Structure formats: C-alpha cells, structure tokens
Length: 287
Image 1 (cartoon, one colour):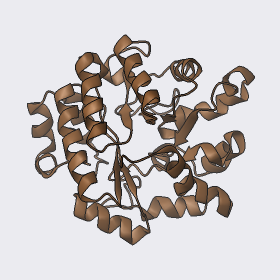
Image 2 (tube, rainbow, N blue to C red; image 1 turned 90 degrees about the vertical axis):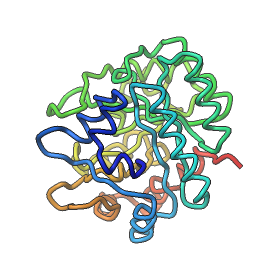
Image 3 (cartoon, rainbow, N blue to C red; image 1 turned 120 degrees about the vertical axis):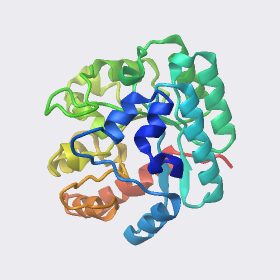
C-alpha cells in the first residue's frame, strides 16, 4: 500500500528517490501495467466486500533505507488508525548496516509486527551478509516473521524476475531453525524440492504464501503444495492491489482470487487454515 503522493505520480515519486527498480515494475514507461492503486478507505471497502477480516501490509524491497522509513511511517500510521483490521510488516534495506537494524527496532516498537518483503538479490546483499544476519537474529529474539520475495527459477521471463538460487533459502532455514520464515510466491516452487529428504527435514519453520499465484501458476498448485507440505504451512497472500487477472480486472479486488481458492479442491479445514488460522498463529501484533 502506498500514500496518495505515490499514486498521484508513481514514476515521478520513485525517480525523485532513486527507486528505479520499483519504478520499472510498478510504473513502467511503456508496456502493460498490472499494478493497481488503492487508498486505505478503498482497501477497507474491498476487504468488506470480499469478507476479508484483516489484512497484512507488506513492505517493499526498496533500494534505499530512506524509502523504507517512509513506507514504514505510512504503515505505522494506518495500523494504529485501524488496529482491528490492519497489520504491518517493516521494510528494510540491510545494506544500510546498523541503521537498518535501528529502523526495524523503531518500526516494531511503533506497532509493526514482522519484517519484509525482503529480496536479497534485488537489494544487493548476500544471504550471509552480517547486517542481514543481525536482523534475522533480531526477528528471532522478538518472535517476528520474516517475508522474503522468491522468484521461480524457471518459466517465462517477466519484469522483476531474477535468477534465484533456492539453495539460499534452504541455507537460511537450516541455519536458523527458530526463524519464522515466509517465502512469498509459493517459494518459487521450493515446496516440491521438499521431496528431497535432506531439504524437507530442514523446512519445518518455512511457510509459503500465495501472492501473485494467478499470474504465475495453475490453480492446481494449491492442492499439489498442500499434498506435499500440508495446509499448516500455506498462507493466503492476495498481492492486493496488484491486478492478478489483468484481462478481467480494471481495478484491484480480493474476490476473484478468493473464488479461485474456493474452487481449488481444498477441504473446508484446509481453506480455513490457509485463509487465516495459520497467519493468526504466526503473526502477533504488538499490544
């Protein structure tokens, strides 16, 4: 979610902050755009229309810490205005060193309850970066889930897709088994590598979210992943306000994707877990 000054001129706002990667994804100079825009009142109305009780606001993987701070400030404000409806994760740029850790502390103390979305390849740091490791240790200390952006290693080339090494995420899960780790976008299909016994034995702390699923995968992925890792480790991610069905949607909404999930061949118990029970166990808002 973005403040009104962003939606008024997305590219101009991004270029003024040297956030050129975000600009190319959210507001490309040419070509099709799937990014939708919304404000908080519209978000809440769309949630009501689709029967969504609560939403988690995910930070972006910004190039600059200053932009992370800016987005965190929006989220702190909105979460505190609507504590019964909204939760928020803190954006962070680990390359900022100690200032990055300070910003995570500030954001969590002000009301945010997780870290991410983080993309180490897009943000230019290695998974074993010492400052990143310190943030991971802080997340464990404070019982915060961490959401990482994961690209599918094979498939159609599209803006924002980088060649990901899934070993990086397995390494992180193996090194920090206490970490509550959420891998976005079905973990780039990492759930299926859990068929490898060594990998599977190290992923008990890993959750997979469904963000952008209709843009990337057949609806059968729900049944296939649940059969592989269980419904307890799958989290509904809407990617709102992205237009997940660009041929059907002029404006973002929750309903089309929820209808797809409803028809994905899951049991009532599995759907209940994916659509809220799992998240309620994983995410603990600051009191």
